[in-house]
Length: 314
Ligand code: RIB
Ligand code: CA
Image 1 (tube, rainbow, N blue to C red):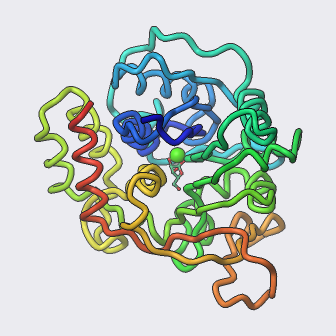
Image 2 (image 1 turned 135 degrees about the vertical axis):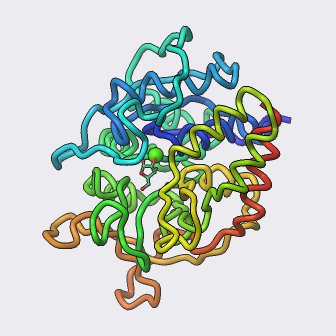
């Protein structure tokens, strides 16, 4: 069985690493390539971390490309919760697998253009970080949107408050101009905002279940996730860290554990108080056509059951 062709665009990043492991453990998915982007940490680290994670899963066959080193227009801001290395306190060895020649944007462009021309199946683009790579590819060749089966993007916040500013989620705030290009590209979008990902809380019991799998990958994953613990039960309802990015992969694997609805989504690029905020027109007040399927809820027990089962296969 050939899997669903996907490209993962990512800023690893602790939760990105877990998402990549989940994808690597899932034969339903055919990972055409991984594109690193600056985000949680500088590109110099994300381009290496992506390969570190592939090697942890013994998948040196996965093509990894380096992408954009800075946002489209705004000043650079980095993440706050993945540590200086981007992989928390987990020391994964320097990769021996090579990075692919060529820029990630060129890889996205040629792959999606080939799909738009009917030369290959359409591709699902899973974005786990700032949307710079995909936005630049779309700006270069808008017609590549025709080669996209779906964009499944972790980003945004609309009813819940931001995690990097009072009203903005990090991936969008880090490059709101790119997010606006992607949201209005015409490609089908499923958005995984904080409103849903905050429910995917890695409580100590859930982390223990992963660690108790006893494999090197499971032990590393549990260590990574433990670093991510916010230890803020007042905000999240329990101790633990929200595993944002793996929900993107889980949606591809078991869509039924999620719920949401179609809505118009826009990005505030003017600010100053709500710069990077994602506006979701839940009641259609603007009269604009819906441009995204916005996920609002996830069955956390099913999510962690899937994640634990799949991590146990690596
Ligand atoms: O706001 C959470 C998002 O920002 C996650 O993708 C995390 O990895 C960071 O990129
Ligand atoms: Ca990320």
